[in-house]
Every structure is written in C-alpha cells, then in structure tokens.
Length: 121
Image 1 (tube, rainbow, N blue to C red):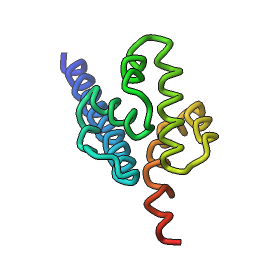
Image 2: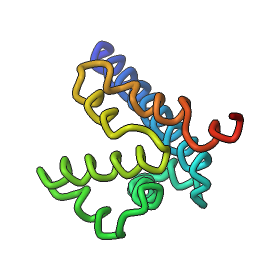
Image 3: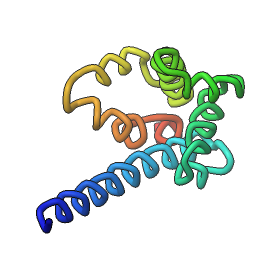
Image 4: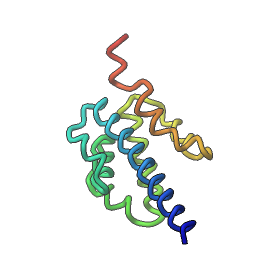
C-alpha cells in the first residue's frame, strides 16, 4: 500500500517539475520575442496558444495540436516557427528526436542566443 502511494507522489512531483520546466522555457521565449501575455505559459492549452502566437501561425494550429498524428506535424511547424522567431536554425528541430537530448532543447532555445542577445553585439 505504501509503495503505491510513494510511486504516485513521486510521479506527481516529477510531472510538476517537468511542467514548470517547460513553462519557464516557453515564458522566457515569449519574453525574448516580445510576445505579450507570457503568463499563458503556465496554463494548460493556453500555453499552446502562446506557442502559436510566438511562431506567428494562425489560431487553428492550436486545434491541430490536439488531433492525434496530425499533432506531430503541427508541433513541428509550431517549434519551427518558434525557432524562426528566435533567429535560430530549423535544424535544431532534429535535436528533439535524439533520446534524452530532446528534453533540453526547449531550454537551449530559451536561454541560448535569440533576439534578446543580438542587441549586445
């Protein structure tokens, strides 16, 4: 009984940490691209809308992000648009496919380079 409870608590804690990680990355990307309402990164479904706004794609891409199999294509287009907004190469999308490395790609996009750092040159 206690083993199952501990596993559930650890799973919930890990889920909260991963969610906060992605929310911080998306909010940082929104700040760097000067996209309004960066706080939407913390609210489910609205965070996808924020990503679509950062990528400057039409609203209906949010709906495509929830259709099985089509969502893979939609997310590739959304992350590609985000990379464009951050002035980064679209080849960075390939890193999402590398096991374990793909987890750190949003942090790389959020904290490496981008429009905010271009002003320092």
